Amino acid sequence: MFRQVGVLGSNLIVTGEISFQADYSDKFILISDLAIDGKIIRPDPPYGYDELGSLINLALGHVVLFAMAGAILYFLSRHKIIPNRQST
Image (cartoon, rainbow, N blue to C red; front, side):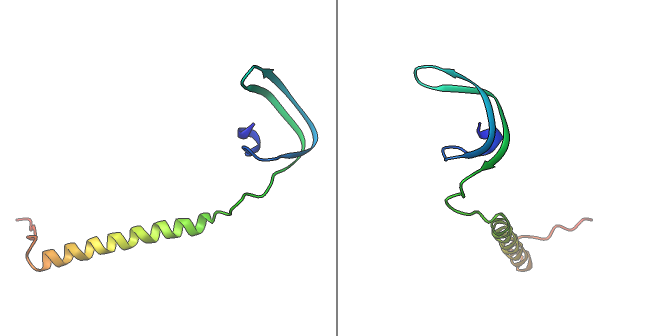
């Protein structure tokens, strides 16, 4: 059911018709052939997630890391700690 409605372990309200095939056992229930014809109301998530902000923070960290690595390599090559390779 999670694949179709995107809710796992939460209350879900459906106004309309629902049909499914249920197979019962002692320890679990298997549901297949789920069909929902109506409006699905999901509860709000307990916390929000800012995808754009997360992407900006991730990218900013990598840009700073590459800039620092470039500055260190430039410093080391400038002071002859790492010899410049020149083609002949």
